[in-house]
Length: 184
Image (cartoon, rainbow, N blue to C red):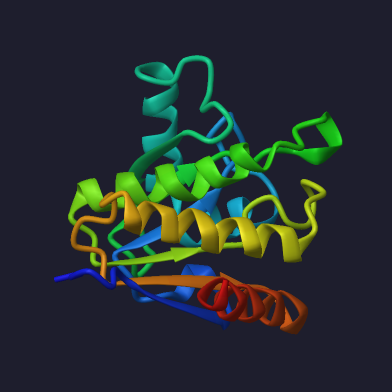
């Protein structure tokens, strides 16, 4: 029941792996086989079942890895979430500076989550940190991409989109983006 208003957008500073939501979005590496940061934390929390599902994806539908901006779902293993939606954010250090690539991560992940029948989705600050994107820019792009997906009718039954970020600076950036986007 999203109605015309779409899902409620919230922000919290916390551990994305502990969120009691239907879908946790993973800021994955294209290999889908784990890595550092959010990706490593999700793989550690989910346990070996997640890695096996990701290996299966690499053997079948994603032999070349997951492209930047694309999204794919697996189970969530031992995490409280039902599913993990993996997406690969653009890496500024590799010249991937187009905000449309970053927006695609949020929009495509939300579409995959909606296709699963999810009602709640938790996003990290995709590409902030190790991939070189400024958290304020990530926040602005993320909020706009989610709101555009709502406008396009791509959110299905999703009732809440929660941005789960690390630290007070990221929390402030996302809070500001949520407020600024409403007033634009």
